[in-house]
Length: 420
Image (cartoon, rainbow, N blue to C red; front, side, top):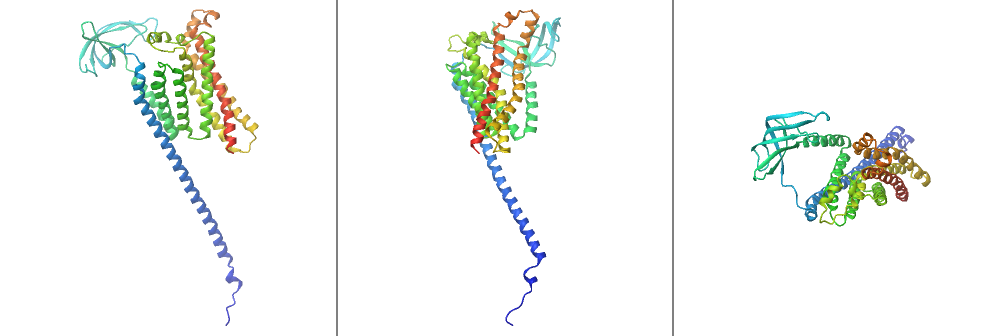
């Protein structure tokens, strides 16, 4: 027999062929899914590594500022005029109570109290003192047995410690409010919420450790602008990561805030306004004696600080919208792309401008009530310096925000379209 003769069924079994084809198809899908999962995991780990590095760098920078900044700025700070100590204490007994309700202010008392106090901390911890607590319409910290409050200790003319009730201890309520803010931010935002809180803490550290002491240096504007740039970059990199969106948002924020500050400075000079006309500005003159303190820069710096938060919010919203529009349709014409971004900005303009103006109006509400109550003439109250400064702050900040929308939109088009 030369060779076996095979039937067609030997080479072609339809059922086995279909089974092999289906198996091969699902094997390819499984391999592709495994590869995709592997690549997604690598991308996630790389992104997580970058986030950890950025967060660690931010924490280290903040710690460096807290440690080093006071050593640099301390030479611009005068010696403390206060020799008293502020410590926690507890009211043990009300010896005498000569108080009555204030007829004009609700929940306020006038008169005086004779109290016995135990100091809870400091060099006089555990010691008891007798003190007189004087009450009035502007100061009404009423003492009662068991009250734990803040007390002031100062040496009297006989070099003996004199103690009196300074004020209620409100710090536990402040910490509670901070916790009530942090919890929902962490629960809803999770990792991004944590980075938002870190950005907020970093901003506070830069303001209080660099900007405020920097106001007493020969170059307050330069220090403030440099600090503003650092705050913008760190905040956007923490929240949005390193990318085109952060670049567009940061540049738009800086453009808007600097224009707001420049507007306030120019019109402040035209209106003969300066930092002296601001609230507590006159008190700064006493601190500024024998110092190279440029109080004229105070108005400019206050504007850029008060407007940076709202402007950052607007800029990142515009940049995020631009990014999503580009992802949805990379081939969108430039004109249509720009109009679509501005359509988002138009909705933001009305609400955010209103928000900024209402914030300044709320801060000036007691003054507005006084104007109405005293029947002030329009030409009288419209030329009060503190009123002029409030109007200038509100309008200059709004101008900066509108500019930030347009500038961020233009930058977003340039950055995202170039990356196509």
